[in-house]
Amino acid sequence: MISSVIIDDEPNAIELLKGYIEKLPFISCIHSFRNPIEALVYLKENPVDLLFLDINMPQLSGISFMKTLEKPPKIILTTAYSEYAVESYEYQVADYLLKPISFERFLKSLLKIQNNIEKPEPEEKNDDLIYVKSGQQQHKTNLKDILYLQKDGNYISYITKHKTILARQSIKEALQELGDRFIQIHKSTIINLDHITAFDSNSITIQNAKLAIGQSYKVMLMERLELK
Image (cartoon, rainbow, N blue to C red; front, side, top):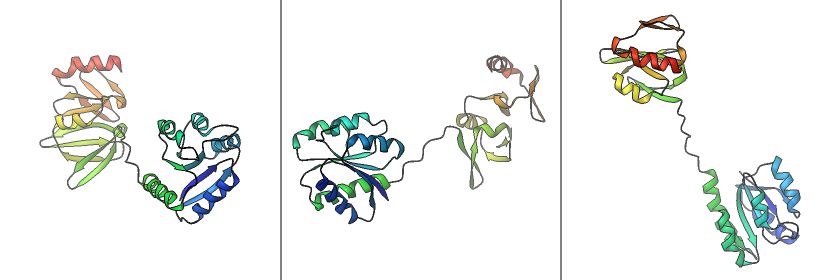
């Protein structure tokens, strides 16, 4: 359900929009205001999906009203003056309805907005998550939970806080998926720097595991540990 607020200094204009809204099952009018200042106060505490906003109001114009909104919802401007159209689109309004507003024009606008609002947002990329393929399954894994990785033949084990995941993968392929807190310390071992509990010149300890440091990796590892 799309939640909406009407802001218009003309009572008849408010009643017309309310009547149109009542005909549509996917939108509701939760409040209406003749005073835009009162509407501003309300919207700070009560976010909505859509505003029907008149441009020509005595206390505060619709254009000025939009400028005050920190996180504006979708806005449909309503006005009897077509000359405001060009200026209004600078604010990326959803639509511009010229009074007197017909139901057909109102419906067209609302159907477009319904598709836009109800369309699921693309899943936000989370750089802390990877998917590790083990057999036919993909294991969603948080990088922060990975302690270390060990290679054995064609397979590599992801040792995490909660489980071990066995993947058919090379060290190079694994490193491409991991973040900058991971470093290779041996031809068969990658560690998460954030989980080191102790180290010396020959080994790294992560929890109860003592992991050997390969000779060719020592210099780079010690440089990273100094920056850790």
